[in-house]
Image 1 (cartoon, rainbow, N blue to C red):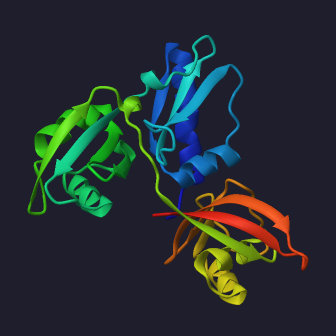
Image 2 (tube, rainbow, N blue to C red):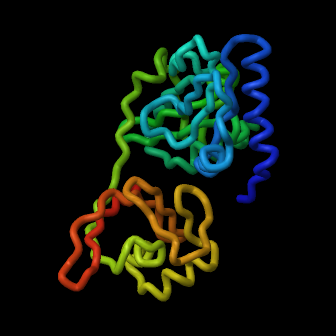
Length: 248
């Protein structure tokens, strides 16, 4: 997806202007990972404000940016985020829920994470559409869905599931890590990077020589998403031990 960086930064600048004008917190729409990365990389926070990115729970991917006056601490409870618990007789996928919400006219900017657990699904969304969803989404495909508003979204405990991958690669270069993650040759990995099929921290990087650090997010089209969790000691041949965590 291509992003209009100027439009995005203008929207964020408006939050600070409105916060100053009304002396009260102001909040963005939900921002995806790439939008957050662009803001962190290219936007300078003006002096005299408290800011926070929050998606409703620790580890959320989509987040709202909150801008608070200097005298007011950033507070997660102030964010306009609600959580709906969804239950069906037969488990459904993230795609099933997303498709149903899109069919109701819900835009990405109003929708946060859809967290699928073993027993139910938690849908995080902007508070101004929660009543509409509760009253409108009764079925997904041929499955009846029971919806319940969670009184305190922050009380929901979402545990991400990962597959741990231990590998040895030449370095922390993007082509080497992509090869380790996707279990392909380094030359194949380099072609994926150059072809725009690999993202680092949500942003497309086309240079195989780009390096990654611990905690970075690596996305390989057709393979999955990985956290560069830990670099270990070098081997005798100067190769690097790396631990990756793949989202499952």
